[in-house]
Length: 398
Ligand code: SF4
Ligand code: SF4
Image 1 (tube, rainbow, N blue to C red):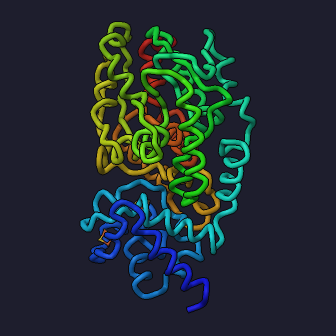
Image 2 (spheres, helix red, strand yellow):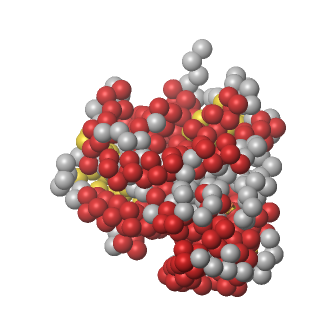
Image 3 (spheres, rainbow, N blue to C red):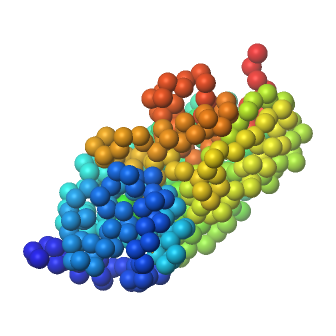
């Protein structure tokens, strides 16, 4: 064993028990359920089962010094199904990724995205000022809050909803719905930085801690009743991870907001004549068990027929973009024959749906790409639930 190899073994043995139930990795029964569940199972040499086997054989360097820790979109399916309750998604993979960052060769785009985040506060490497560029495209003023200001809802947009062309459409649709409902809301503007869930899942624990502590300080400088976000990763981190850094405050995902306003929205819904299917985003569904709210919203729109895909709710199949994979195209190109997003879009199309409804900006980006690759443009449309609700409010343009 070389020096670095033994260091990797040592670091892994020391770091894992620091995570909730992290020690459980020792209880792995090598059942293989994780690899069988994994969207990348057919393409990787090291499924979680084999990663643990490598640890037991003192061969962990074969994992950490290669690309294998990066073939994971943090979808949580393995963790959900693991009979030994091993925190694969929150601990095993991120710890191996931190070892890859320390001793191996992480993918270039990942390193670039992390660098952008530490320099600019967002993975796009854009200026903070541009974070609110979308507000200029609205036909009503969006309140950019100053520290000390009060608002009912603090709208945290996060990176994909602020800077990505597709993501911004979702942000604008949701803002229009809040405006329609006369909901008082405001944004942090250039004071907002990435929430950092993908940084955490990428194993950059030090950077994530800095991000979380800085964000908590900034968020606490505003007064609000609740945080609302369109991003399931931001939702998950704020709700379930930030509290361990001292944050407390109600956080809702926009599906929950829409559900709680459904009676009011329903009165203005116009009939839409579409067959749709709902894709459960991993960090809304599996991670936070929010399955009914989006379905209730869709079912409240007159004229819509909703069908389920073969895999739904806790068995939903990942878009393949979580855990930082949305940044790592080179990894997908190198190892994957059929990307998870393509497999999922095909499944949506096979369900007979004309619209695949999602509730996550990364989903919309990944699936729209897959629609193009599969040549399904004009046959299957990708819409965020906010976009569908807005369409129901405005009515189809004839
Ligand atoms: S599902 Fe859990 S117990 Fe089974 S092989 Fe994977 S990590 Fe081990
Ligand atoms: S979290 Fe998902 S992508 Fe990652 S190893 Fe588990 S099943 Fe595979």
